[in-house]
Image 1 (cartoon, protein in one colour):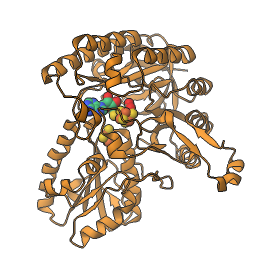
Image 2 (image 1 turned 90 degrees about the vertical axis):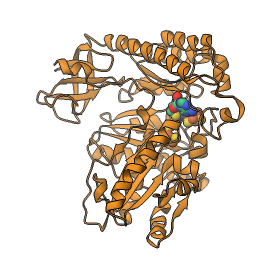
Image 3 (image 1 turned 180 degrees about the horizontal axis):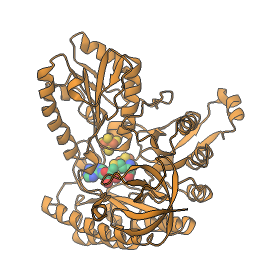
Image 4 (image 1 turned 180 degrees about the vertical axis):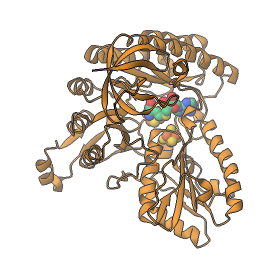
Length: 484
Ligand code: SAH
Ligand code: SF4
Ligand code: F3S
């Protein structure tokens, strides 16, 4: 059992978000060419890669988990911090060795780096044949044809409408139990540090009928948990066009669907289908959403509510749209409506432009007040084109950023442990996701509050719900045994 202690680290630190996910599923349906795709960055990108695999499936491509066997290699990239882009550039140099052995291999860059750098990528990275931004994936078959004809191909057009609503994603690297569903694209918030509004374009919400249909289809295929994805899910808003009123009445969907309405619609798909969502924005999350969460047992009691900083002046410079007090008040609402068991996690940035030592201490004191379950913590990385890069000098020395980062990471580790400790001695409902990474004799799953739980398999199977008595914990994992 000893090795279970270190089972899974859950404290995200700089760089974690740039770990790629490879295509781990072979899809052999006898198609003529093979695609290998690697995703970097946020869950949206992972979800997009599944849309890309679906579009290319129709255009004659199977997927492979072995890049050396591929006819086409795609890197679905992230620009969020400089390091994320460096990781991709290093990977491209490595991929050169595959191309040397198989010169006809095509290399494409998708995602946020494609959108940010556009044709510059073709100049800077000679091995790249194709560049496609996040709204250009329907055009991929055409872009591939252009490369087949001996040209380089680029499409970085950003759309105000594209949501890929009608495309059924090919689930890549899936455990068959949990899946992502994109409910919106883009972001209109313009946080001053953030490159996303430039790489993903304007915010738009996807048709709720197609979201409910996708969730229903996943449930019938055996999936038991869906995560609704968007950069700011709380601003989800969709209204039925005038001419679709008949369908609207038939389906019983309100004329204007907000995030609370959507959550409720998806929760009603089946009581055994768990719902998670990410990311909530502190300025937009409403009591209405919290109350829907409270009403449905299958909506997981877990909210990712990134604070970024605990100081109001820095929050203003970041253009986050809330103060320290507003944020703490939101946390209070969550605890009042959903109770102390509801998991809350955060993202934090240290060393943002002009951040003083006292302001940094306010981030630490806010952490003490909230006691987050998890946090993803980063040193500020200036991104070209963002408001902050134009208006404020990146003036905090790297070693100060790193030291502050270490301080918040250490604090978070203590809090994660304390939060986990609160579950010891309780019985938690856990959805079995698969074998524990460290031991084939143990299952791994998560509680409603998103805490990773490890326990002996018994006679239970993947995709089943079990009650687990929590016996002990680390800062990353709950450890227990199945009880009836
Ligand atoms: N839409 C989400 C976050 C998307 S980006 C939200 O609004 O919270 C994920 C996280 O990356 C952010 O929450 C932020 O903490 C971090 N991040 C974004 N830009 C960054 C930058 N320039 N430097 C360091 N971290 C950054
Ligand atoms: Fe970036 Fe802010 Fe939009 Fe999140 S809400 S993606 S941090 S601009
Ligand atoms: Fe990265 Fe783009 Fe997501 S910048 S974090 S992949 S939206």
